[in-house]
Length: 201
Image 1: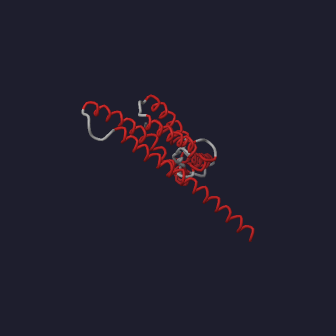
Image 2: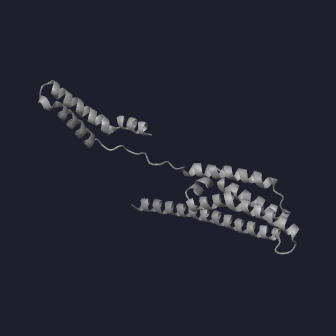
Image 3: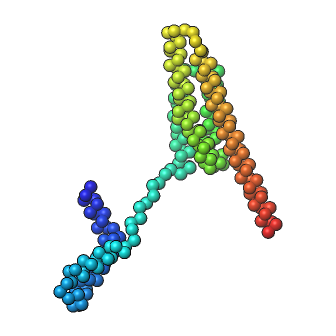
């Protein structure tokens, strides 16, 4: 740790600028201009050079861009599909879930739809949360509840609860699609206004 700090300082702009000024001090000493106090002159010039050197620029952290985030969500959707394919679900819920996953796939499909989605961070968040957490939790909760229902019959139907959950998620996905459609229409209207204003000027 300490060694890396020392090496980092040796390569820093402060050390390089200080060294350049220190070399100028040595040149002055060799020329006889520094007198008997030449070590102090060299050290002073080194210190001055280190002080006036610009600070090291720390690179800002790099975060995934929109395309990378969508790519990760697409991969998660593939994993979700593999998980769902192994799950035993009632026919009605299985049909709703298949339609829901198709809706997610259509929204995430590379192309202009994904370009619109990438420009809407809230929509990306909603989809990633549904794919990574909500749908798997619905399926897993159904299996756990169904097991308990076999031991202690009665109470709410796990099949009905699963269908209600998937219906809510499907409605949410429809809302995302409608919001993206409106965002695209808004961009189109803005461009129309820009073109009309440009034509009048």
